[in-house]
Length: 286
Image 1 (cartoon, rainbow, N blue to C red):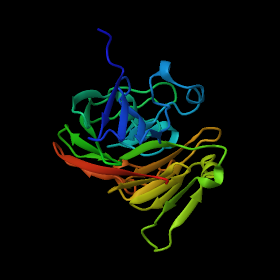
Image 2: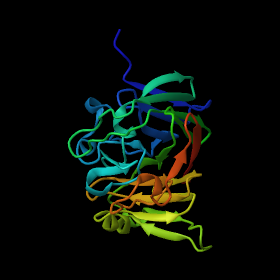
Image 3: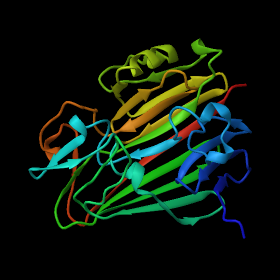
Image 4: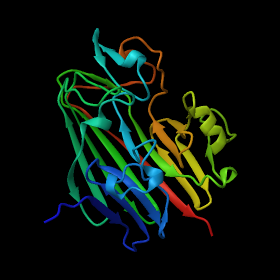
């Protein structure tokens, strides 16, 4: 029997569906009424269309235990330096399918302290045992996504977390692509057009203190909501995607102190767990 490469889940009507690559455990397709909204960089290599074969080779990743890059590719924990590539260990350590139904799928990653993961430029190691459980659930015109972090070590664990999904853009209509963010400190929404996001992405990203962002494109709108506190926007030049990323702390690649003291970073007590939830709502045009 040929092993299954992908897993499809959908709502009862079949109008909303998601596909997950079982090789890298990434959701590479999110459709509403047959309209595709996800960038397919994370789909199986042999199934990629030409536009997906270069650039960011992911559709969505979990950022943990850091968000963004670390100074000189390392972090300091309890006085000791550890290699830590951009966005941390979770993106490289691998997930295993734990369970699924017609509309849900759950994956688990178990990491052992000081395991080295990631390739050249992304080498990472973290001195804590942890487990991540991520779950997808498809409903009517919506995706619910949750991430549970478990500290399996016997001492407190510092960390930040984020979700990094990439949505499709259409290069021939740049002014019809924008992201609306409502900053926590004001009642005036911030609107970022895709050309502005791409320009700012050349030297970093856009980060707003907000729990919700709405991405508008010619197909409709995608609302992304979480309880993490920040939204990061990133769109690489020459690629048909924009990333709308809920994150728990602002990236700071120049920070050079203890990870536990980095602004916005959390502490998870020994043998404790914490869960974070995300919601994606799709509203097609017309």
